[in-house]
Length: 319
Image 1 (cartoon, rainbow, N blue to C red):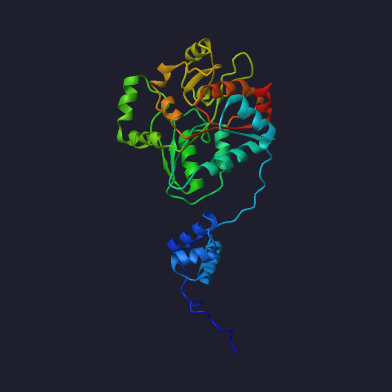
Image 2 (cartoon, one colour):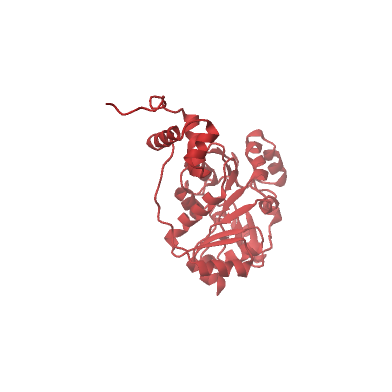
């Protein structure tokens, strides 16, 4: 005798919308199969088959990843010393990008907007992001582009690659980082193609930025702002004379957290400091002991509330 068949055994395979709905309820919202069945008006056996289909068709992908090792003592010490909401410290430099990517992944929700800056460390974070397929997320470039930055470090390229990792929409700024005057900046911001991206600055839930170090009297400079070639030698020396030790995007700051170049920001096609202050989660991802002074100054600005760094930088910051 043939085994009995349930009424749903011969039902057609679920469509994409139902697959996604069931998978999110089970894997994201942690509902049981019985709860999902009751909510959608189908049997729990049908729910189980849909979940099997979601896995077989790649709608859901399960990955087992080794979490990067963290130094919890250093994390607590930084949070207490600098009064920030959250510090994450990778025990080794090669875990920094993965730890930052996991931190950002945990902060970013469905339907939210995330801004991306520039730099080699930020590029490593983008490459390490756990993949998603969420077209409700918007990825926004936070500063204009520069032809002198490497392709993998330019904020326009990073926004595109980041959106690709997330299955999201990306918004690029079709303009240079700096223009000749504040009047030119105002005119550019009125251009529809530029305004279509910069209007998202006020919608950000998360911003991912690096911290540039000017290397004053110590290690060599490590700053995408300086590498961009947007500033001449005279302008850089003027910033150093004003006490600038590092930068957040296009905003140089001093050791005590003061921003010292309002004229520079006035001709930058980039998110403003006031807008950054209003972002709920500003995640800074600097690494290396040589950046410790710049990290300290950046934290003094009050812009950053989530810091992800490595143990070498953390120890130097606390020394």
